[in-house]
Each structure stands twice: as C-alpha cells, then as structure tokens.
Amino acid sequence: MNGVIFILTFAAAIGSAIVAGIFFAFSTFVMTALGRIPVPAGIAAMQSINRAVLNRAFLTAFLGTAGISLVLAAMAPFRWSASGTPLVLAGGLLYLCGSLLVTIRSNVPMNDALARVTPESTEGAELWARYLVKWTAWNHVRTAGSLAASAAFIAALCRQAAG
Image 1 (cartoon, rainbow, N blue to C red):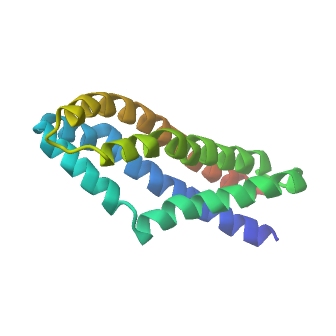
Image 2: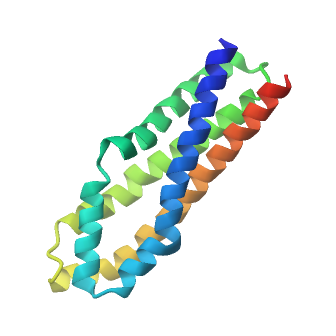
C-alpha cells in the first residue's frame, strides 16, 4: 500500500504543479495582455480560451489531480501514523479547496456570464471591466492553492522517502 500512496502522492504533486503553472500564466501575463487589447477583442479571446480549455489534457490534469487529492485526503485518517500523512492531507485539502472549489464557485460562474455577452455590446464592456479584476483575483487564489498543494505533496514525498 505504501507504494501506491507514494505513486498517488507523486502524481498529485505533478498534477497540482502543472495546474499551478497554468493558473500562474494567467495571473502574471495572460489577463494583463487581454486587458490591454480592445475590449471586444479581449472578450472574444477569453470566450475562446474558455471553450478551448475544456479539452482532454487540461481536464485530465485539473480533474485527475482533484480525484487523486480526494482519494489521498480520504485515506489520510486511516494512515495517520505513516510518514508524511499530515502533509498529504494538507496537499489534498489545499488542492480541493484552493483550486477545484474556487474554480467551481468563482471562476466558472464568471466564465459563464462572459460567455453570454456579445463582445461588442455595452453590457459586455461593463462586465469585462469587472471580470478582469475579479476573475484575476480569484485566479491568484487558485494559483496559490495549487502551488501550496504541490509543495505539501513534495514535502510528503520527502518524508515518505526518508522513512
């Protein structure tokens, strides 16, 4: 069982790092770039991104990591005395709350609202001004949550390897 936990923890560390990197890119330059172009083009580009992100590679990384995090967190109480288990639990909860839950509760509803506007409309421009600030702020939270989860999983792997 320890080998399975090690492999799952390794996969969760890699998955949460990949997701953190994607979110980091949006927080540090993608949203800034979209905010610098004409409003209709920025809206249209983000609408396109929001459709394109629903692909097998991203969803495997994002939801696969959530599934692994859930399994690891659920198993933690039964393995509490095993080396690194508190860190595995922390990593799982950080990913589930800081990445998945924030996405579902904050970013996806904003994406859905953006999908309903016409890029050239006044309504679209008003929404876009709020969206850029609010979506990016929540994306910072997702970035930090995913990165912290990855760090916790890596620390757990170090503890598991040390015995």
